Length: 261
Image (cartoon, rainbow, N blue to C red; front, side, top):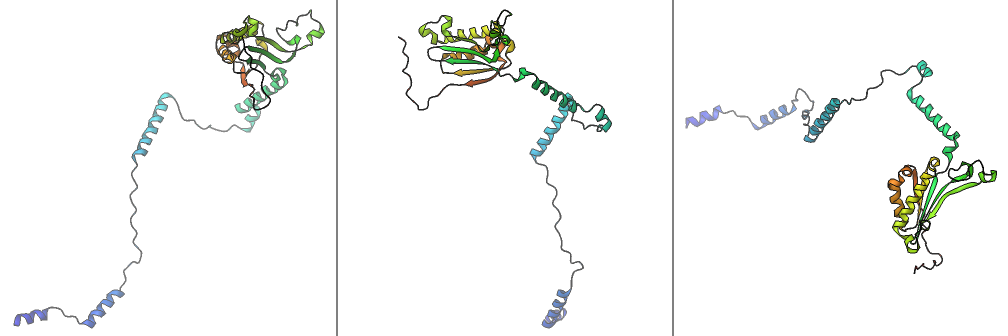
């Protein structure tokens, strides 16, 4: 019975009231620093695979351009002084002056104010008509008019000429139903372009407008001739292609269809 008594005396004993006092003293104590603790910054994210690939691609392009002789543009070393600008000016100023001089010369030159020549292609189901027209000019100024010689009278020289050439498939000895064929339209187109070249009318043609009317075989035939070897002299002068086909929307009754017996 002596051993349990010794063990009980050795163990520390704190009463209930003292225990509350000790806990209250520990709760009053404060830490040395009241600064809140912040979390450390995260490490920077690693470059993605897409960014790495793009960076390598851009460096390869730069290296290849330098090997081929392409360098990045360098800024000008220094700006031109005021005296230098008064003496010679920059190249941009000289370009502007030359451009203004060119436009002023064009305004003073009446040839630049002329209207373009026109080729009217009227293709129907039964025939094809081609007319070559120029801006209004006197006969003396028109090449190939036949009345610009010195023996012509003053009235003939002052006569205004607009139509230079007007032919149809019938002028090439195509009869009846043959006049509406594709072959007739093709030969007619080649004949007209040949006459324009042979009569020397090309020197006055500065611009050419092609006016197409109708849906006959002559439309496609003239286009083929113009794009072929026969139209190589006029093809570069064409400035516009106009479709003047008349579409009927209501209105009076149309003409009786023509029947070829």
